[in-house]
Length: 282
Image (cartoon, rainbow, N blue to C red; front, side, top):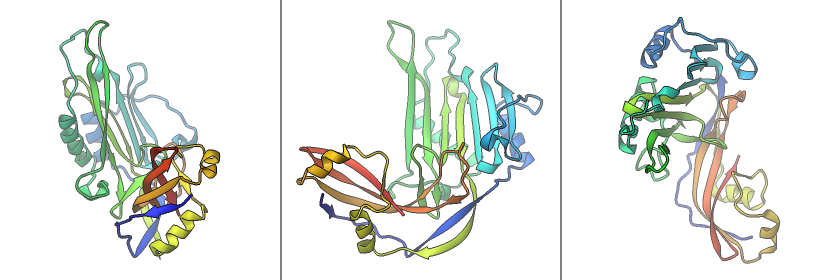
């Protein structure tokens, strides 16, 4: 399968590798967090102690019975909060959740509250805006039009100005709001890091060689059957974007190093159809 390139992005001269260290959440920060979540230090529960939940400094606040919980896992730089009554209309069918615009504004305010700066948040490939996604939950009584119950926004994390990626939407901040603007949930995944070393980035021509030889190439996910693709001599992959990214795994998985990768994006012409393809190389 031939690969065509119309890449315009410039790569940096070098990139850094980071090691993960425990994040320090001060007692003052935890007090502010408890205040905004309407919890207090007397409200605790016994949570999991397995895996990352058994690492030093893990704290659980709230009530499992009431579905109102806050978990803090310093080793992973992870904070997770859920409050289910934020999406309970208490039989008031006139209530509607927030709009995308309201959620974006409040989400940015909450990111600032958590100590995130604008430089900690990734931007789109064209750098025109912050990189964010919305997730909407709708519902309502039978025979009535669905209405918004909650709206969430995800802000992708950035390291050294480069976006953080994973197999899912991790490495950043999810925050959502329900009825009456009440904080419904949030999940911050931002492992604390220290630089280990830097190394030069090979020229695009060398990077393309690695890509075309299919050595250490990863796809999430590959859009077509690989066996069928090998048989199609007319298939063409056109690459249009290449950028440096950092890989931060799901917060429940132990991670000791956050490495840089190259992220390639393009269009695959296969069986008279266009497929968006995203590839990663070391």
